Amino acid sequence: MLLFFIAQMTAWADSCKSKNLNTQEMNYTIYMCNHGFEKEVEIAKKWWNSKGNNITVDKGIYDCKDIEPGYGEIFIEFNDKKTKVKDIEGYYAGGVTVRNHENILDTVESSKIYLSTQTQKDRNELQIFIVHEMGHAIGYQHVSENCNNYIMNPYYENMGNKF
Image (tube, rainbow, N blue to C red):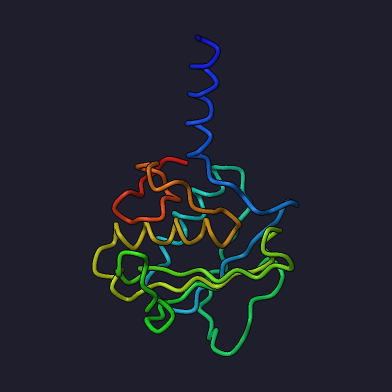
């Protein structure tokens, strides 16, 4: 009975661990396409690097229109047109990440992160969305919606600083 309990607790704990699609080690560079979130991007970079990832931030501001990120590049920008996506409960997304990879279940080679301008109204909300979307950009998937306070929870109100 005790062995079953330990196995069940391990299974529950594992269900809150975000799966990373990357099958090889990647180095990513973030390029900002707008002003207004430099501090939050730097904090998110440090957070993910503390989890064993290798992300750098280019300090420039770039015009990212009509160009695709190259291998190991992540573009991040405010773009309300790209975030006009409703979730299953009818809410608009605070952020959307488009990942590029050869196979949907393989290493993320590059990404574009789009943030709603609505997230600018609350710096804490903006910070959470940047950390969460950066997680997607480097290959992490959502955890179960029951995993409260985990950064990769699919619902903003359930996100937190657990990994």
